[in-house]
Amino acid sequence: MKLNGVVLKVRDDEALVSQTGTNECEGCEARGSCFSLSGGKSSKTEGWIKNEKEAQPGDLVELELAPAASLAIISSTFLLPVLLLTAGYFFMMNESDSVRAIGAGIGLFAGIIAAVVINRRLRSKKNFNIRMTRILEKTDCPSSGNNETMSNSEGNIQ
Image: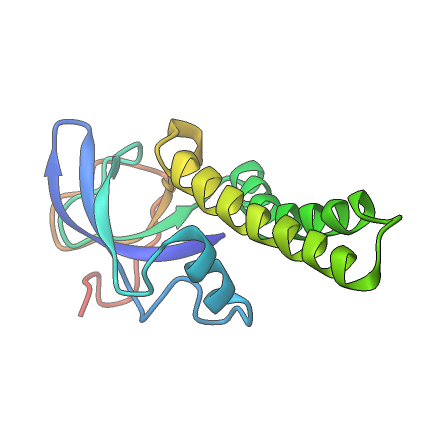
């Protein structure tokens, strides 16, 4: 998952970045499910991230969540509840239809609870945090000589 942000402040080796646009998940049809299961909020976010590209306040940067992290989050959010629903159904396979339905419901409920817990724990892991991949636009501040930067024709962010 890639998104853009603007650097607001810099301290030591970290940058406070505010996400640009309305939401990093605005194009996804399943965003409501993700937010309800992960406990996330759909509001504009800002946070401190490692400033690997030496960005300065006002710079527009590209941010990315590692593919492995995305896969783990998607798996726990969507696949785990379905797997536990199926397991609950098959666990009650020799019972009546209503008991199988109750087993499936209990499995689904357990899967949703597990997804919420797992997603909250994943947020605290270092490898599951968003990182700065490149500087898209520099401000008028002196350049740090980073060859990976790209600037627009005006050279500043509006």
